[in-house]
Structure formats: structure tokens, C-alpha cells
Length: 88
Length: 142
Image (tube, rainbow over all chains, first blue to last red; front, side, top):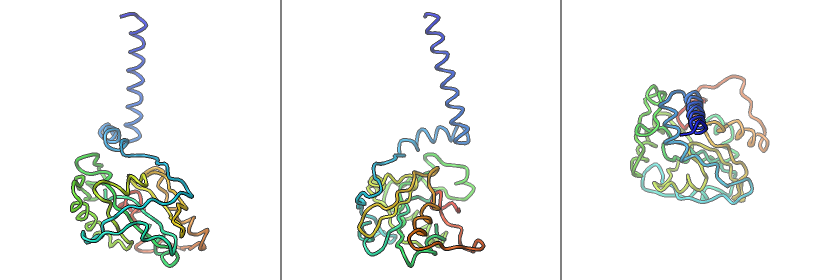
């Protein structure tokens, strides 16, 4: 292995370490950094919807676990504020 | 968010859509989840989502209309909603406001500003009981 490649690999590993340390600092801990990379980033999407687009429809289940309704059924009369989220 | 709902529920409709969990025990669980006793595995069935959603409603006496995304995550995918996000759909069915992707750009104040611009600001002299509203996730008071 030439001196160049030894340096290139060394610099790459140092950069990798710096990125990981920054991620740990941002996420809170190495475990959180791993969780963010493994579970969060694959599901986070900016999306392509923009103001003025037709609002997509989707079928939702009511809390009774039996009845369904559509998001667009709730639109029309007044503005609809839609809050997406989960418990955890 | 509940405070915004209380302030504008006579002018606008509100709908909460429960999507896949952000910090389940079998994925990226956070210390705050344990501290707050909010420990659930990622639901694999719609029945599990219904059970968690009902736990949430009961625990916080949550007043806003609620719908649960299908297990194929159709609503989440259509709106790029995960982990949390706001939208406002106007009377013509078009997107009038698109909130940023949570948690870093999830901003209830922008929703309030949109409603205030249209219906007038609602001012509160002091925080009112019950204003602790689910925000960063549905469960975290803000």
C-alpha cells in the first residue's frame, strides 16, 4: 500500500469519526445516533406536496376500530388543520 | 396544539392522524419515553394502532377528532408526514399551509399564525390549565 492510500484511508476514518461524534452530540448519545440513522432517516421525507396542490386523500380508521372515513370527507366547509403524529 | 384547537375550533376543523410510531421500544426508543411511561412496540397490525391511539386519547383526554392511518401507511406516504407534521387544507381542497418536517421544523406557532391571519389573533394573558398540548409528538406537552 502506498503512502498516499494510507493517508487517504486515515483521513477518511478520521472524517467518519468526526461525523459520528457530531451525530452523537446532535442525537444525544451513540445509541441515539444509531437509532436516528437506522430507524429515523429512512422514514423522513420532505415530500413533494406544496401550497396550492390538491390535498391527497387517504382512508383512516376511526378510534372504534371499525368505521373508516377519508381525509377529504372532512374538507370543504371550513379549513381543515391536519395534525400528523404518534404517541411516542 | 389543543390550545390552538380551543381558540379556533369555531372557525376551522381539526383532524389528528395517527401514523407509525416515532420512538417505539423495538426501534429508536428514547429515555423520555421511559420517563413518561410511553413504551410501545411498533404496531404490526391495525388493531395495535387502534389500542395505542385509544391509550393516548384516554391519557390526555384529547379533544381533537382522530383518525388512524392504515397499516400500509397510505396517509403518511401521501403527506410525507412522519414523524410529525402539520397541514392546513382550505375549503377548495388545496394545501393552504404545509408545515415543516418534525421534530426540528414542527411549529404549531405557524399554524396559529395562519389561523390568526384569517380569523384574528386570540391572545392569552396567562397560560390556561389544559393548554399543555401534544406537540413535538402527539404526547409531548408544548
